[in-house]
Length: 114
Length: 114
Image 1 (cartoon, each protein chain N blue to C red):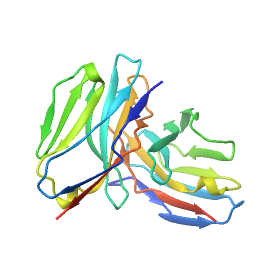
Image 2: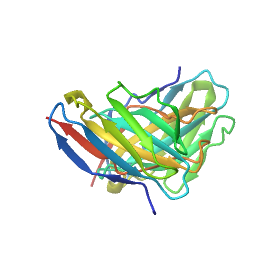
Image 3: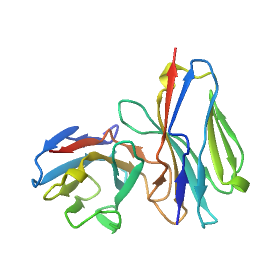
């Protein structure tokens, strides 16, 4: 597609429920990234994909967080047993390769855990 | 470890004023990349500039200019003759040459009033 697409744009969930956030990168972009942005904060790196493998998962905050990517396309970030501190905007970005041309970010998914 | 500090949390200016957003970084890498991103109220991060560490030339793009000074580990961003549409949160970010994850500052919220 023309840009990075994320869905849903907003998600409200009850504490303890699982959520799935989806990212559709720009066609041809082999690298895909997930970041989290808490209110009033900068972005925290979560995970990076090169193709469908994830060389670096070090940013995932706990084992409740997982992500997968199908081929060089869609990625899903799953949060199990959501907690209130998971409330944030989850941003996805993609780039041509792991070396830098600058990412293109999606508009994010605003997750609210009540 | 890498760190980016944006000491200015919020700046408010009147239209047509010039404004400088400060960014100070820390890294032990000899080769690294610096970035600025703009996040308007819509939420989507917009890439503004990438600078590699061995290129200390300042850059001007229209009303935007960037001053990179390795001696002070700073990469400041100036908007000349600010406009209301410049109102946004601006993030400075840093990455190593061997990496892919961006380390973001906490951002500076710029409000330009008519």
